[in-house]
Image (cartoon, rainbow, N blue to C red; front, top):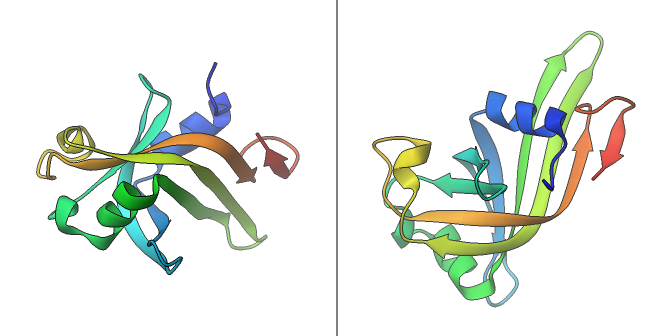
Length: 130
C-alpha cells in the first residue's frame, strides 16, 4: 500500500521542483530547491543533482537519516488556490539512481521513505493528512 493517494502521486509526477529540508548534527536547518522524482517501485521520493555527494544536504542526510520535502504550486491566483505536499520521513543516501531523475545528474541521490504526508488542495476537501 502506498503512502500517497492516487491524486498525490499524479501531482508529484506533474511537478519538477521541490524543497529539501535537512538538519546538520547541531540542529542547524538547511533548505534548498531541487529536482526529484516519485519512485513508484519503492514508493519513495528520490532527489538528485550535480556534485550531489559533495553537498551539505547529502552530508546532512548521511549523518541524520531524516529529511522533509515540500512540493507546491498555485493552481490559480484568482481565486487563490495553492496546492502542496509535505513529505517527512526516514532518508538515506544512495550511490545510484540519479540518472533516473535526469540523465545528466550524478549517480548519488537522497531517498526519502515517507512516514508522514500532509497535503493541501490535492485531494477533495482542502487540507488532508495522509
